[in-house]
Amino acid sequence: MKKDKKLYGKPIGNYITIDIKNLKLAREEEIQKASEVLTEELKKILEKHVQPQDEIIVLGLGNIYVTPDALGPKVINEIDVTRHLINYLPEYVEEGTRSVSAIAPGVLGTTGIETVEILKGIVENTKPKLVIVIDALASRSIARISSTVQISDTGIIPGGGVGNARSEISKNTLGIPVIAIGIPTVVETAVLVNDSLNLFIEKLQEEAKSNDYLNKLKDEDNYEEIKQALIPKDYNLIVTPKEIDDLIENMKDIVARGINFAV
Image (cartoon, rainbow, N blue to C red; front, side, top):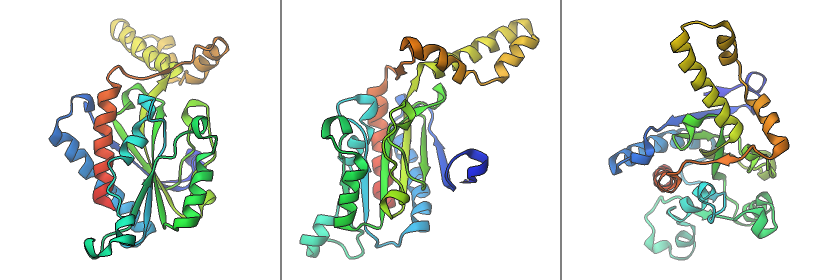
């Protein structure tokens, strides 16, 4: 879907959401099916920006030591990189193979360097035609945690979902197209409370059948009000499911396979 900035408050571009249900119980065939859907959607976006032989770099954002934030680095470990083979052992590479490189640059707290600064240096020296960025996201809905894959070609702002926004990674900052693949892995307490409040209201509505006050309360998005009430006491925590280890492993397989077959 192509979004208009005036209507959605986001940069104009292509935005795709793939729904994946019951991922924590997903079997191999379900993981493979989800990766195939991701492959097809990625191919469509890639065709809009690069030629079949254009070089691509895959960037895995996040902290490998923090499970909900480890998706990007884990995906990088599964990417089929070919740039070194094409450059140094071309006789062993099938003709027509795309040049692919991959990197997980770590986080500002451990490197002292903004990710976009690292990436600018890499882009300047290796000269890829497009960047694919993978990152874990903070969701505005409990139902979306590790159950959707969000794709866009407008770039990404690392840390933006948890109030720790870093420098933007996009065509504006790098000079080449950036495709972002994001998967929600955490929610704020304010989201948790807001969604739980709606579920509680639904339960009361089922029992009371009608209530003007509850109907009005449910129709409103109370996230901002709840967030403002929690922040002064440092109660707006970041929450993740207890099955996050399994969810990250399954999502890692889906994303890595989807990228490998698409590029």
